[in-house]
Image (cartoon, rainbow, N blue to C red; front, side, top):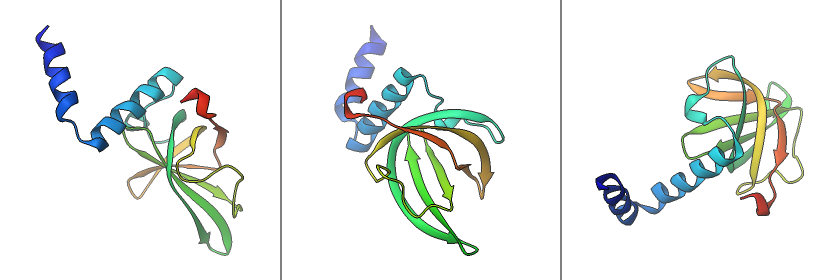
Length: 123
């Protein structure tokens, strides 16, 4: 009983960012995806979340589309080498990705992930 009361009080005093992170974590759990906070270097994972940013970067004369996927527990960097754009991949879009995680400068990163755009109805 005390746990429920404390949970309700936390819900009332939570910031907007904390509330949104909580909502995103629930969506990821329902989808059966691995939380970003639990991904390990050199592991194959399926992660879901919302794209916070999408940027075109050049990597040694090769174009690379980079995106930041947020799931409420952390951020995963996605990099598609040789791509300048991907239809439907833009900030605010929800997606699931599968790939091999590598730590790059302390940031979990997946190169050329398989991806699935998640329809609004699946939110």
